[in-house]
Length: 133
Picture 1 (tube, rainbow, N blue to C red):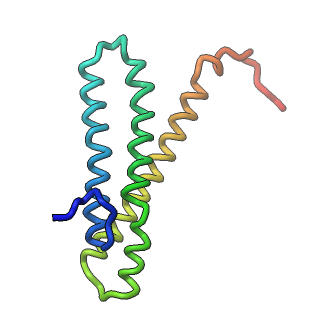
Picture 2: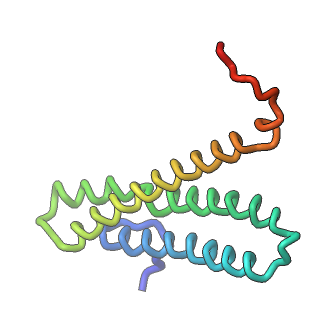
């Protein structure tokens, strides 16, 4: 049995590897979020608010680096030189879903950051007069 976390050289190897990397990055993050949110006292809520988005970014950067990177060249090579296979179709669908999910997470994180910036106490402490340029 090959190590699924090693660099893949086939489409089926990439599919298994990307599934393993995605699960290995997101499941501990989700479990930690659930445990910390329910176990820590509410006075430590700032730790969760600051630490979890940062760990979320690290998890998604690791997914992009280990699960997404390299998938497209392997799938394209397989499309060009080998006959159709269900494994390649599954890999292409998974690659598309993974990239779309990563982009949506990035956009969501940017929107959340923007909303936090707009709703910050510094923004509400302004003079209250409208800015007319």
